[in-house]
Structures are given as structure tokens and as C-alpha cells.
Image (cartoon, rainbow, N blue to C red):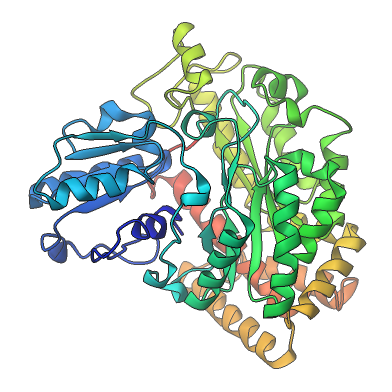
Length: 485
């Protein structure tokens, strides 16, 4: 779910606003010409789709505005494609634009705030305008900015290195709004939730009693840096506040590559493996991001990444090729070195220790290996090596009233039949279905009996099938792909 859509809607005052999210519904093109203006936002990975939409809107003659991460770093790309661009944050410029528009037409085609948003003045997002039943999770935000300086990252370019936060009472009010809108899970989409540890701790101390008062209505997840492992108090509070998982930018197990890209926070203290184990034993499932293509990477990196991900039980591993995003320190360095390739959306630079073709081939081979059903489930069942994780997860689920026999069984059966018919339609019932059955018998009926239930296992099988099918279609050319970095 896009967190920017309900946030912008909250800035619109008495104007009528409709939200369209292509993740959950198609665009009704016939209706768009009836609107006074259409706004569009998107990230680097959505560049091609954004272009398609803008070209079609131009044909319709609709007044079009664009904002978000992509236009903030690639203004030139949008020249002539839209009427107005918003660069960076828009809490002050969007209302200003609406006033200009209401008076006739804006006199500017570019709006940019003169200073960062004071998060205490950010509006309450309009979660009531979203179709909550179509989302697995909602999105809300506590802070913007990250104190670190990773060379490839555009976050510090757009939002800066000083984390800015909302007051706890403001954030709790947004949790209330999300709960009332019908969401049961929420992703706190901060660039780094613990960018300011003191404030993060203070917020968590408020979320814990909120969860207790309301019966743990929202399962939470967020993004944080690996030094979370060195903050036991914060991990304990996250667990008590019903955080189920955390996304961590690990990027690579290679020390040289981490130093090269200035991700020094991943190099301090003990090993990445030890840090991940501490986070998992605190009751938090770890999802993580990885990158291949650093200057220190040779052909061996693909095997190193695979082994690290498998050995640490990171079920959901988001792997990407290094991407030089405009305005980032990486982009400027590669530009100085003459290594940029501007016409390739998937690999826009020349690697040092392999060709671009070798990087692409190695990347897709790695992704295919990671999301083969056997490899996916091997990572998933690594969780049994962390008994503290299992005990703590079971305890918080009981507090949240999850695991009641009949509703849970019904949910599991729904997933089972959905997956069964998906495998039948794909012709993979035997080849893939037998793998799921083998792991269920071995881990849920055998040595892991009672630890991972039927519904929980089916949920992971459905996730596995999604990623397996996606990677298979992407590598076969059935899907158009774009590297987000």
C-alpha cells in the first residue's frame, strides 16, 4: 500500500478526493476526464508504468501533477509529460498548489519546499478512503530521514540525514484511524525506525499500552538498521508492541563491499550472523534486502549471497542489482569515472569485476535459486533453530487472540484450496505440490509437530508460490522487469 496517497488526501481540506492504487484495482480511464486534476506518484521501479500512464493522461487532456521519489531525483525525465512537478516533500507545497489551482491555474510548473517538513505538522492520513479489505497490510509513517550515508541510497538525498519524528500521540491517533479503517496489519514505512533510538524507545513505550487496551488489533512491521541487534531494550519493546518482523538492509556479507558503499553500521561489532540471531531470538522475524554488483563483487558473490541467506533463515530476501540512482553519491562517483550507462533501466553502470551481462545472468540465477520451493522452505524452517523466537511468537499470538482453532483452520483451508487450484491451472501440482507436501509432513507432522500450524504453513506456501512464479515468468521474458536498486 502506498502511504503517500492517504497522506496527500489528508492535505486536501474540503476538496473531493478519490484514491486509485493499481496494486489493488485497475484504472477506470473513462472516469478520469471528469476530474479537475489527476496526481501521480511512484518509485524508481515503477518508471515505465508511470510513463505509460502519463502519456495516456496527456491524450485525455487531463491536468496532471507528479510527485514522489522518482520525480524528485529525475526531474528531466518528466519535462513535457506533466503540468506540475513536486520535488521532495509536499506538506506545504501541496496545499499551496491547491490554492493556486482553485484560483484558476497555478503559475508554476515546479514546487519544492524550502525546508524539510516538521513531522508534528503532518496531516492525519485519510485511511478511510482506502479499500482496506484489498490489502494484506496498511502503511503508516513515524519518521523520515536516516543518520547513515550509504553511497547508493536516495533517502538521504530526499529526506536528509537527521531523522524527523511525529509526536507519540499523533502516531497513536493514526494507529486508531488505521484500526477503524479495517486494517489488521501495518507496515511502518520509516527509512530507519531506530534512526533516533531515544525517540523510538519513547514511542514504543506508548504503543505497548495502546496494544494492551485494544487487544493487539494490528500486527506491526518496520524497517531498521542492523544495529537494532545492539539495542535489547528496543527489541523487547518492539516485541511487546506486537511487531512481528523487521526489514533490514544487509546488502552483502562481504566486508569490503560494505566499506566501499559506506554502510559502516553493518561492519561494527560482532558478525552479521550473530546480530541476526539476536534479533530473531527477540521474537522478530527478519526480512532483508541484498545487492549484487558492488565494485568488490566478483562471480563468487552470487554463491556467497545464496549461502548467507540460506544459513541465516531469511525467508523473504529482496535481492537487487546495484542501481545508480540520480543525485546519489554513487551516481556522481560513477559519472566521474565514466561508468554510467544511461539507456539500460536494469543495469545502468559498468561493473568492475564482471560484465553487465554476467551481472544480470548471475543475479537472475541467484533469484531463481532463492525462490525455488525447496530453498524457500529450507529458510522458513530454519526458524526451528531459534527456540526463543518460537516461544515468544506463540506467546504474543495468544495475547492477540490468534490461533483459535476453527477460524484458523478455516483460513488454512481457504489458502490450501486457493493454492491447490493455482497449481492445477499452472500444471505444477505434481512438481511443486509434492515439495510442499514433503515439507509439511517432515516439519509440521514430524519433528516440528505443534510448532508451526497448518494455516501458518499454508500462508508461507502461498508466499513461496507467488515468488517462484514471478521469478520464473521474469526470467522467461513473460514479465517486463525494471531494477529498483
